[in-house]
Image (cartoon, rainbow, N blue to C red; front, side, top):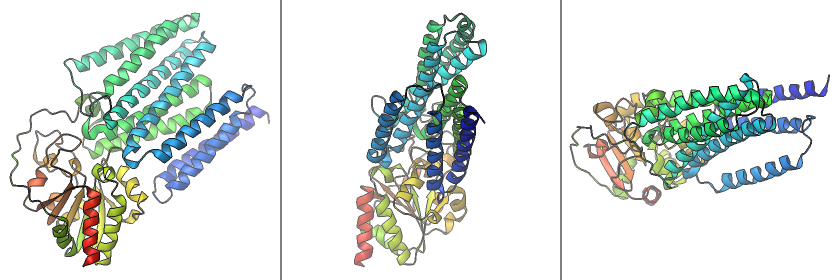
Length: 461
């Protein structure tokens, strides 16, 4: 058996660890092992790559690995849970950039390509560029830095986007044709520039509750870009790893869209979150504010409590306080569950990860479809920093941008306690009539401070 065959066997074994790692990630209790297994597989694959005869200079690779690992560790330790979606967006962009650089490096080293080779370079350059620029816009929107988190719309927007796409198709044909003569640098440069513009055009009209879908889709793009670059450099493991990431990203995107009762095309062409001014739903009722001691009395008398976490929980870093509240409630004989909406927070699984960080049992976290049928038997539904995912307009107001999105039906519980800093709208920019319902009480203030005040009431009782 020659060296190349042996190394390809190592690649196959590494690919198997990736697949097993994905399988383990499907269960919260085994997710950590899945991450470790995949990381070990990647480390073995990198070590095997050093043994290929084409690799003659190791120092630049090692320097790049050290610098990249240092940056990754710094991000991991310094990024708070509130910044996790932004960091995921940045990492997606970096993955796209790496694939784009591979395309340019391959073309620079071998400017004369077959039509098929030129086509793969063109595809990789487009996907890599779109992933990079789109991810940077997603990061800026989530961070609300340099650009508003709201959708940016203008007249003829779709026509401009379609014109850029048509131009990229035309340039792709010209580039693939001229690579045979080794004289297509200009076309590749224009393709890269237009693809960067396309990434911006695709993401700027998106806002509100669609951002988790965008994060999933950009993650898929980064995987597809890696897969395409694998074909360019003829690396089987890169093809497999990229395909796994691309496929999982698409599947997660479809799951997110189903959770919002929307199609992928509707997300990327609809500009969700824009203020259309079409809603005619009349808000009936008045705000009924309560203080921590009054909320304590409601919770102390409750046999069943459902807590609905949202992005506000992450902002106030109240996950440890909410776990302590769960403990004192259970000590009081109350059944406590956490209702998790698929798009709560700003990325898939945001709330699950946040609560797991505070050692909340996975058994206490239930999905929306499991809690809604029992909501009428719940004594108190406590909403902490959530808004759009409990908004009754989604099922009552056909003119609302949220119309049709499945929600956690907190309004059907006997008493609702909403913890918010103010009466501000949610991330989608849609007013919430739940706040004015007869069974709703508003507990204004920082979530962490309010929870601690309630906990103190329990301990002092």
